[in-house]
Length: 295
Image 1 (tube, one colour):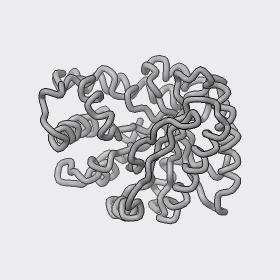
Image 2 (cartoon, helix red, strand yellow; image 1 turned 90 degrees about the vertical axis):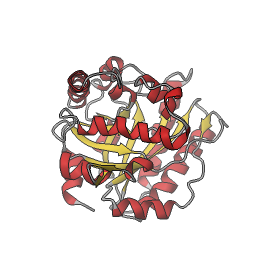
Image 3 (cartoon, helix red, strand yellow; image 1 turned 180 degrees about the horizontal axis):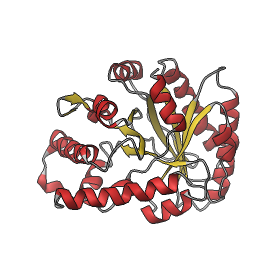
Image 4 (tube, rainbow, N blue to C red; image 1 turned 45 degrees about the vertical axis):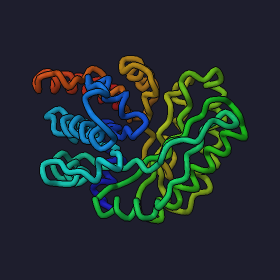
């Protein structure tokens, strides 16, 4: 494990950029960016256009390690180049931004008020390849819709089970059991999730560290125990569908938690913008998220 990267993730000021939209969410992300489905044909073309968007963000002078601790990549992005370097390698060598990789393959249908992750075939091979690209850690997302104790227990158990496999590859896993911001039982679900995560952390092998990516809670500082837990390298928050302004407002109420925004980061960016307009919009977004993250 890269000790310099470890120190940056643990102590660095700033936030983690989520640039990991995958197949299901890519068309919507591109449409918000001003690229209509009629402007590309097939998945290969869609991912090529998406890589151009991500490359434009990463190469922007606003996107640097001064404000951004790390960035989460989609597997297809890791396999593509930026200026002749692998995307993960470019992030660290040119931007001093720590690379992470999204490893989940999407969600199962809702059952017991939750959506667990689909099986992740050939995970060992993906993790081995990630280490070859200099990736520091991984991220995997599941979703909680209701405060169903059995469902939330399944979510947490699955997250920690896969986390152990990732730890065996000397990578730091980001567990992301997202609570849907529109859940009618959001606060109750968050309480159950907190209890489950605490149990899972207590059962980790000695010396193991993970990261947590959690929905901004209804109760400010609900996850403060995790911020202080020696087995948690960092607690980060997802924007979860909130506007960037709302997400920043809520984030600032949670001391020690930093952002890991996707939609919140790219809000307002457009393929039709000039480089000057694009960079100014991105710089404003990064500045606001940074300020909320260092509160």
